[in-house]
Image (cartoon, rainbow, N blue to C red):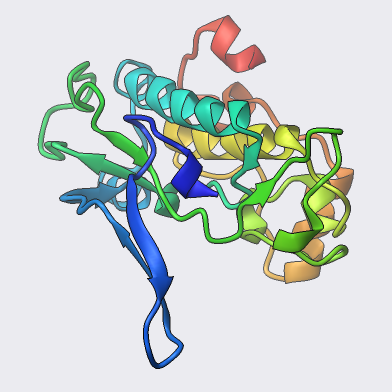
Length: 205
């Protein structure tokens, strides 16, 4: 899937194949940076001014994948790599995230979306749950068919965490956690962090 994608915000894949002993391999560009998950752990959360350039680049990378009918299915802070980021910059640094420094990585459970609107059965088993529970869409949690909108849901969870330092849902039990995604409406970022002020348009998104 990723070999068909060429975009500054998606990791570049140079080669892939199978070694003589049967071990598959891929060769990608080397990224010198930190994951978004690491940045959130260090900073707690980002300000709107810091977050918007990052969010824009992630959206551009995912949009390019969707234009090529590739669904990532595992969008989360661990799969977003930031290069040239100075974590010691004071809050509200607009230039915390450099231009074209963000890469979406790990298309390991990606799925091709067929031309007729159906999924490519060759890349996955129907009814199989793929993804990371904290970021999975309701249809992923149910093992149902997914389309491009599933990635958009996951991005909503990621961006909520970027801006507030927390995900919309939390539970100790895995099944209860997944059922929250299925049955509950996610709170707004304003409700998640009532002591912080967000632009109304961003809260609506």
